[in-house]
Image 1: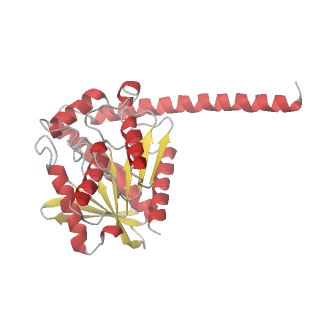
Image 2: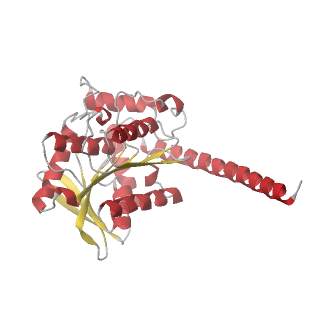
Image 3: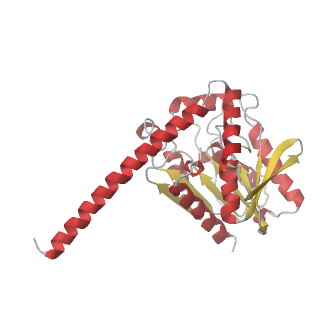
Length: 316
């Protein structure tokens, strides 16, 4: 064996060992996330919501970020901003996740504080009404209320970037589809994290990732569908945006974990946007889980920075 072959062999072995090391690390991380998620999840939905709020409050306790309550025509909202000089021209409207049955501005601080920090933009999050007390179309109506609030403040549609995670990704897409239907101006761009786009649960990853995802499973998703859209046409684009008409949509950036049950929701959405000639980019993160950006890991920080790069690019 000559020197070149020996070097190639060493590189190959290094890559194999490095991959095995990363795989073990990701498995350990997913086990940790599974245990942490188990502490939050509760059959009593009110206790589940309270646990989420508590975690959001604890994880967002920093002097670098300011939180300011706001009343949006009777709906609670929260402005999130960095405690330093920052950009005022553009604003982020964040739609929080939680299967349409849980989640809040408090819990969303695990993301909204990061968006504010990496973009130096103000972020508005709002507490839309939750199912099963308030099924579809309550959340959709409240998202439009938040949008109209920004317009009344003097922001133009092109000054707004809409972001959303999980069900919030669904809500973000639904809002833009509704704006389009009404012939209104659309936002400058959309950032989606593990978006829930198809309530019919027809994606291949429901079979291939169902046992791997440490955060979601098919039974949980079925409960959320039942609570939010029982008796509705699940292929209604305002319920399952995957079935919408995306022609004329603004640029979209999608982030999704390789190990999540909703992987296909992102993959199929990406293809639909490509087919509609929408400027779209999707990053799939190896070894990551549903809305991994909430977690205090390096990959989450890298992903948030990539989101900021996308936002800066479309705001030029």
